Length: 464
Image (cartoon, rainbow, N blue to C red; front, top):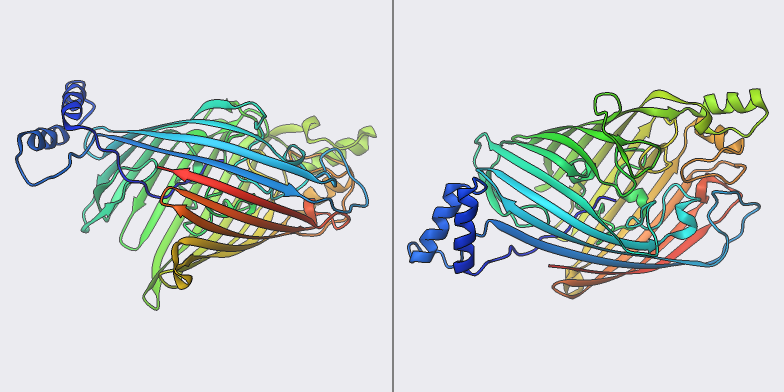
């Protein structure tokens, strides 16, 4: 899945090397003249700048998550059920951000990544899998791939100035408070949309997929959570708007993407209003999305199964469909140490899950609390609750024995899937944190005849 990373200090080059490299990039037209002039001024001793602003960024992260699931009771199990046996799971990822300043307001980022891991039951059996770092392509052998390769262009529109801090996939730079931002290339939908500082990063915050974004947001992505597309953001005085179009996978939850961007696509539109309550900043967001792809409809599959005396299968009835959804999100800073979030979202849930997970409707919320009150300001505790639900046709399909991308117990005594998660992030030192985590899931896979399931884990995360 696509993820986000806390700020890291920008890399500094030795002046002699940086000067030569900046000159070469200037000759190639890849660096603005102002960046080269700043380098020359520092080399000759002009001005009072102690360090040279590098045209490069170099960040990295690595995350290891280990989880254990105790055994639990179930009246029956199916092909896509979460195993009732005691089991363990792990994931490992490592990512680099290689950034380059281009012309005025533009930057390029390239993210090579490696991933390895073993999920519980091959990610089957639940609407909210327990580890957001695991993808459908996880394996016991490390997989190296390109996660991102994109250009971001910012155009200032005035309204004063603010400074962006150096971060993963972001240079430190001053920007206008009112601006337009274009992002194009290979990146993730969640790199731009539904940004939640209080709980969307499984590498440092909540691990369960129910908290990565709106649960019913079947956002376009390959099976690793990345994509190709374009987005445009307007960041105004107190409000913002974002619009994007992205490729769909060739098949449900597949790795290969469909390049027919005007035939099969995922469109996303988000509006954001910023406000203050008791002097504390907050945000309200409305997210609208529409997917167009060759998908199987649950009711069509049920009708086909009855007509042919077979178990319903969405693969038998795939044709052109559109899937739509909406999400509301509220983010609020309570004090310097506490933030809360609330999401409520809905999709029509008439067709198979295509890129995310099998959640049709959802209400979720949570809080993160810094350890300032107990003398550990770099520590963090998080508590989250999610109620995941399915639409009527999706429930009927599973009850008739149909299999989805993640679900399929062979039968269904429907009940909302209820997820509780708590973690404590312990800052070992500046670049390393350890986070014990506990998750409790009632009605796993929306089935009252199974569970509850528990997941106990530990996460190690390092970054620079």
